Image 1: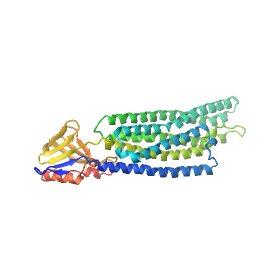
Image 2: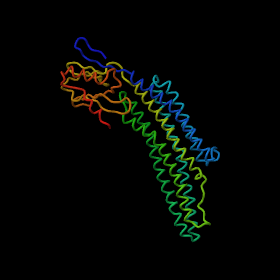
Image 3: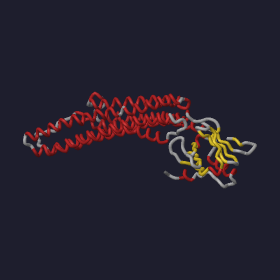
Length: 371
């Protein structure tokens, strides 16, 4: 920031110091999350041990696949968190882009156990259908009627989970495409793109949790309820994976911790991208004639006071936080995050008031809104 001694003009410059500090803080938080992950793993293993099923060799194959997948995701997230702790503030955009692709691919890997569960739902549905048909052939219509809801449950959930799987996979791929769109716009802050990316990061874990809940419901409610309605000499076909229901509860809970770690790493990478793409030089000048703003296409642009129809703040919760917005008559607004500037909002307000004899001011009331 400086004042021109000739006309007392006020100039604000781009300054990476504030955002760089935020990136370092986020990277440190990501490293601290590793401690919470270690605690979560300890708790999970303790519960496994108390359940008498500590060894994954005692689990059904699909359960082992889910455990191995979660372990791999955890390792990748932990490695990225450590790398970002030391490299984030100085890493270039290309490096951070590679990191983001790795993180989203890693998150998408959580869909693999879901595909295996969907396959199980289909295979077990075929077995139950044969079981129901057999009851009909044996003349046990009451038994067939009692087992029919189990078949409907399996068929419905198979279709629903399959549709959700496709939808989540599409969103994850779309998030990577939006990352490219964001990077192709040099001055874009990617507000919408980053929101979609954050949502896409959680969806695979969310679907894994839903699938785990379905397996628990099948094991602890659906199959036992049907068994109660059948004759004593008729037994619902067994499925070994149903004995692993507690493991799936724990794996689902651990997946939340793992994806929280992934989410922290993504926040560091996107913040580092913002830092690496920050412009340099003067951003805003305020003088008696009006303002000069740093237009990304045409260079500095003069705006006289009558042509400025808005000087306001715009709230944003995500980095880089609230923006300064300047309305240009008949054109799109010009905006810049306050975090990008070497001055505080109050200083800009004082400069605007001084050069307009208190006729204009920086309206920060929108930033007071809770949402």
